[in-house]
Figure (cartoon, helix red, strand yellow):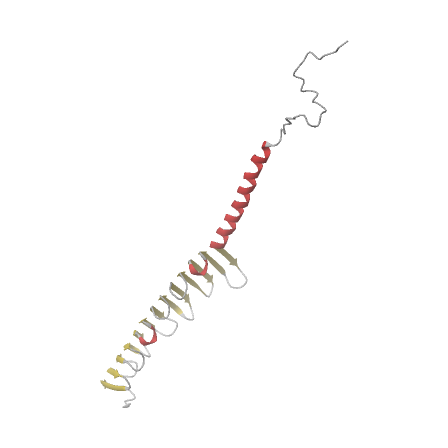
Length: 238
């Protein structure tokens, strides 16, 4: 008697023959294709975030008390020391207040640097300092300072330079006070200390009467012209 299975497509019981073809399916294989790209995206996102953290940095600090009043400092930098940076801060206490700021575009060799600070208190009065530089030591530079009060009256000084120490430089200053009177002086120099130079001074009051002086320089040779009227000490200087 022969027994045959009426179901000719019997896949529930595969053949025991090791050489017979088997089509085994792996129901979880498609998760490989789903999980791997997410893993790669996670790694790439972490690397991108790390790179951004290197390119962009920032900080902000605040301190209240500690015997120094309120202190605030904040800054940010994009692209490191060769990129763009800005820092600013300030202090406020019962003795006075102050503020400072600095920034840069590029580095010190070819970029632009600028900084400034100001203060206001009972002992020093109101003061301001600022300076800027562009394109390194042979580029452009400017500085300015001013002071008002603090027992010194009013005082200011400004200077600019182009082309380094052997380039062109200009500076001017002035003062106004009861003990010093009013004064103004300017100076122009081209080609360094042995180049061409011109200087002018004016003074009124402050125990020195009224005076005006003009000085010229060509190389190591100097010439001067001026006059002085009044004053406590009238001395001729060569």
